[in-house]
Image (cartoon, rainbow, N blue to C red; front, side, top):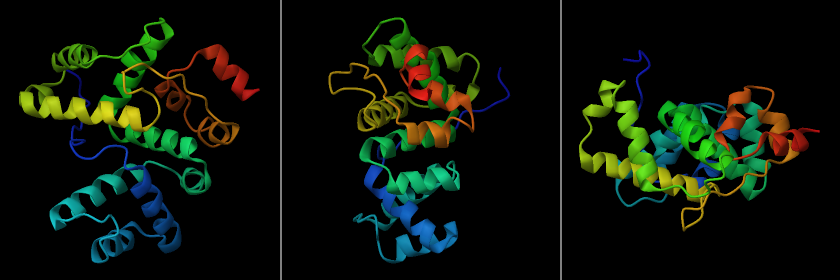
Length: 204
């Protein structure tokens, strides 16, 4: 069994696009995540009905944003909608190694082998394969696994990587995004469905 345990707490929300940009802007102003959390909760900046939902969503959003460095945070705030979505996808992959592995081993691999659709069966097959090496996956109920699958596919659609018909979208990374992300870890770029030839062209 692998020593690296998967965190599987992405059972709520989706990409949190608008909310993440708002929280990131607040962080740039306050410079401290504890202060950000206090202000978000005190003023219900995420506009949730229940306090428990507000705290849970705030915790989830900040845990992802903490995966981004200062340059990436600035681009998240100043970038266009697609750059923002791609950065948030990267933050999700950095936060959850299960999703990162899925994006590389399933999403990108299917795209590279010209299998342009992504199905629930693909998720289930990947999950069952990983469960053989990760005991923590065996403890999840079928209902929780179904929820995880639902949220992941929602994140993929909101990030612009999957259509409503579950067709994989080619990722087009801007020069600004590549300059900010590409130098940190080349693995980050493998989270996207993109051909190496296209990636080389974008970086020239």
